[in-house]
Amino acid sequence: MSDTQYEVRFDGVQKAFGESYAVRDLNLTIAGGEFVSLLGPSGCGKTTTLRMLAGLEFPTEGQISIGGRVVNEVAPGARDIAMVFQSYALYPHMTVAENIAYPLKKRGVEKSERGRRVAEVADTLQLGALLARKPRQLSGGQQQRVALGRALVRDPRVFLLDEPLSNLDAKLRHHMRAELVELHRRLGRTFVYVTHDQLEAMTMSNRIAVMHEGVLQQFGTPSDVYERPANLFVAGFIGSPGMSLLKGEARDGAFRNPAVTLRLLQASACQAMVLGIRPEDVILGQGPFTARIRLVEPTGHEQIVALDLPGGEALTARAAPDMTLRAGETLAWGVRIPRLHMFDAASGNRLAVTLAE
Image 1 (tube, rainbow, N blue to C red):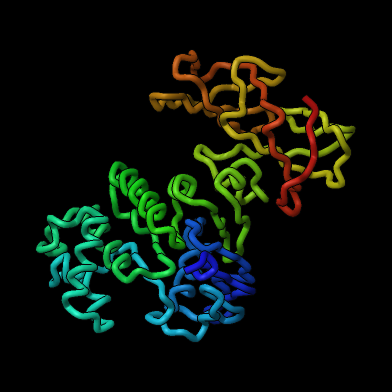
Image 2 (tube, rainbow, N blue to C red):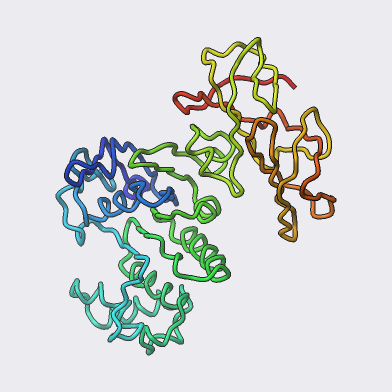
């Protein structure tokens, strides 16, 4: 198959439940073979979007297509997709082999062919020694791999994954992220992955679709959404610790705030603005501004520092683990000006303004 046969498109898709819209005017093209994450907080519309793609929900308006074929009215089983759920949804009375083979059995695939394909999938996912076990005899990570195997055995065009790692502990999640990335690389199929965990999205995806209140906020590479957030929601949602957002105004050729004054190289059409500063772009111990240290959190490889600014706003910074910092002290600070972000306070949209160094 060509890559276009793995392409997924949402054209003007909306989904309403009564008078409430879960998804609004979604226009999104996922290229064949991409790993795309739908990312956002609970209730943002990401799972509804995935369920519409799977055929478990139907759009109120718009078209969904897979490989150039509109699938709005196509039954889930005829869409050539496979879905892995958060709960894994394994049949407890079946063995691992029977669980993996079940989609083929439903399709009427011959027993010998089922056995061959189950063996292939088991080898790929390192499940060969577990084929005779029941789900209750497996760890969480093993159950997750069985759920993946049941999807993989169908050889679908598109894999849909609905927060499949959320029930695993942190160490196992890290391991399974790497396994999923490697599986995607080997298969070359389209993966659409739903998560509220930005670390998962940032480390696994080719591109990320950030959603909020049913609306697509930004669609871009992990670098795009981190380095050039399209609006205040994306700026505040992406990043851990999050970006500090300082309210101010453009006046007399500068952005002015009770704690910060930065010269603008060109006039801004809007007056009320928001300055965004990532924690790694704060320079502690030197600079033209002052702040009071409220809290220092050592994490081993760095310190996360919470600062109180004149005017009552807060700033978060990263510091080297050997830097001496004490709560209650006042210190100087500065910023890496080329890495700062400016937003229109009214619309929340990113501004193309340049600050003077």
